Image 1 (cartoon, rainbow, N blue to C red):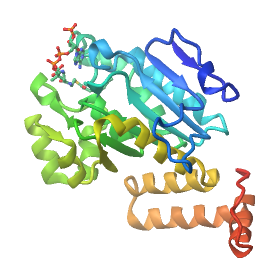
Image 2: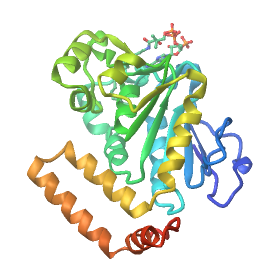
Image 3: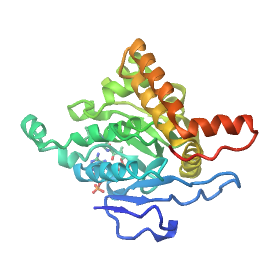
Image 4: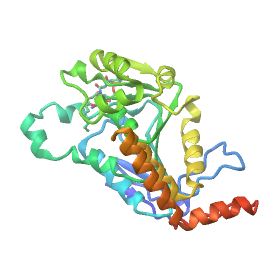
Length: 286
Ligand code: CO8
């Protein structure tokens, strides 16, 4: 169900007819792009269920992760923006109609949550461009990305408690790490929604922008990352992710190892030579 345009195609050549997830690579240029901004190396992935506020059915999630894995394996792709179709929601959660009949046995045997583990293994930087609702699994998807660019009208929350359950795709872990135990506890135990400004103040999001500028701002940020040396970008992403998953001592050791390894790359030689020669670097990704 995923619709992926080749990296060699012009932006306008993306086939129509995509269903649950739509992929444009390269992404369209930001509408109000500054002369210096570029979407070279940037892909745009759009969740395509606006009639259900982009609720994350299991099939949609599979499509999304398959698309991201394909982009991750495509060296010209240096950064990915994920957004929701329409203006009302990034994603209003898992598909409640699909979850309603589930049981412990069906969820355990179904294996459908493996998609979340595959998502966490994606090495290319992911930026969520969030307009409107990012609730439940939608908030968890945004938090599984590396950065969140939020619209002023964005609303984040983990309302699962109101459905008789709790977050099940990382919410208790990633929200707590992002905003701290006291705030995460209140949000998750009451199911309250927080505004973009509150999310910004509590450290959940990278930036808050006027609603109409959200996608452009995310694409512009992705473009700036895509212009950096890709091996170093991936290594830095992995090290930052490890900060949440290891002790400080282990994280510092991993960081040092990754830092040393980058000194075996052409991009390190090029970056430092360009600095001393006072010219812009040309990255080869080697
Ligand atoms: N699942 C299925 N359909 C949904 C969902 C959803 N999560 N959210 C909205 N929709 C549908 C509505 O049913 C409605 O469809 P229809 O027109 O056919 O009736 C359409 O989208 C529009 O929604 P509303 O009419 O409700 O729009 P409102 O503006 O009145 O309300 C809200 C917007 C407040 C966002 C409201 O839709 C809402 O409360 N949605 C549910 C939010 C929620 O509880 N999310 C958590 C779900 S549970 C979860 O995410 C667990 C994650 C576990 C791991 C993830 C596995 C994939």
